[in-house]
Length: 158
Length: 380
Image 1 (cartoon, chains in turn blue, purple):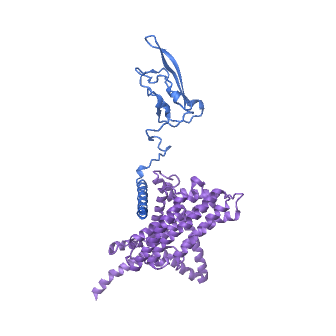
Image 2 (cartoon, chains in turn brown, yellow; image 1 turned 60 degrees about the vertical axis):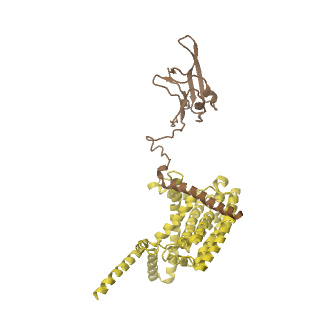
Image 3 (cartoon, chains in turn brown, yellow; image 1 turned 120 degrees about the vertical axis):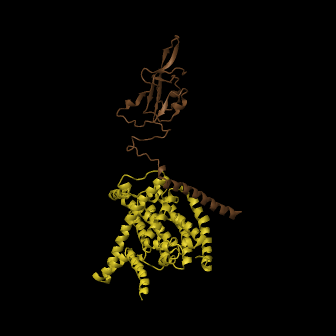
């Protein structure tokens, strides 16, 4: 029936508009929901969301060990050549040669924080940090080596 | 003998109190000024001075409304979008719009080379003049009205449709395709939404039996029309609010200046104070349509009364009539701002569908209902 459809249309529209208005009125009256961070003012107490992606870092434990095996999966996953893995060969106590990283070079100035390297890493060696104040006076300071000097791979990570 | 005096005294006291309270009202101030001017310079010059004073007051009100409404809009928008809004200039950011105005005043008012210079420069003033003319019949407080003419509603609907000329003029004279497109859309929109706005206003005219705004306000002494008129008046109120939102070119009906499609529509080429005049005219128009809505449906400056609750009604009477008027108007302005920041923009076909397929038939049938109701006397 045309008329019933018409009336249904009108009431359906009113109902859906009302739903939208109710939501915005809730936000209008509940100022605790405000998500604006007044950044330079609240620098000391700034809380970033968990998923904020600032830069790629490689966590080290207290024995100066990391989890990177030097498999270059991150380098292959990177869409704009931000990561370069420089490998070397360690001699294990049994006298065998074993591939390990010499340096994991990370170009912060090229990075778009797309998270693909973190997804690609099979051993969870790298992750995204929440730092974001990256400005420096010299471009060369943005090229970073992620593994700390003298660090070696953690026991049991293959 | 003594008993009579005692019984009379309290009544006198209440009367005195009431007079004390009504001392602070716009009507008394204007009457005092009128009397003083008449004593001082005579009737003719008094009229001239009063006209000047009224003009200055209107311009002052314009500037004030522009500042207040812009900051209000930005705060409402921010809070609805879970932001903070302007909070740096002045206390809580309340001087932000003043700072913006100063910026616009010192900016260069450019006229493009290819533009029709006369029309281009004339258009913003027409927009302003229309908004100023619409101020005339509005009753801001009890007995405080610039021009109490007997066809106020007709005057408002006639003058408000001139505003489309300023928009078309601006769009045409800019010699810019976006401006022209925006202006054409705006023309189609205002012409079609005028109909349902007019029909929903007619509902109140039918109930009151008068086109004069003073009579309409007086008829709401025993209750506002939105309460007295049952469902048909509520429907008329809803169609009125939708239609005036479209007529003032505000979101969700802001096709004329859709910034994502037409950069800024008819005022793409305007800058500096000429742009500010359009901006101001938009906000003043919002104020005017809300004032008319408040006058027709919410009783203008009439205080809120509930039937026989004498105490409550007395308390309501103590609130000055101007505060009632501005309170109602700003409530409606908030409603329109709330719409703007909630709903997405309509396409032009959806816009015209809404008017011709929904609002117009509904308001026509509604007008019929209201007429039957008025004839049978079914309202309170």
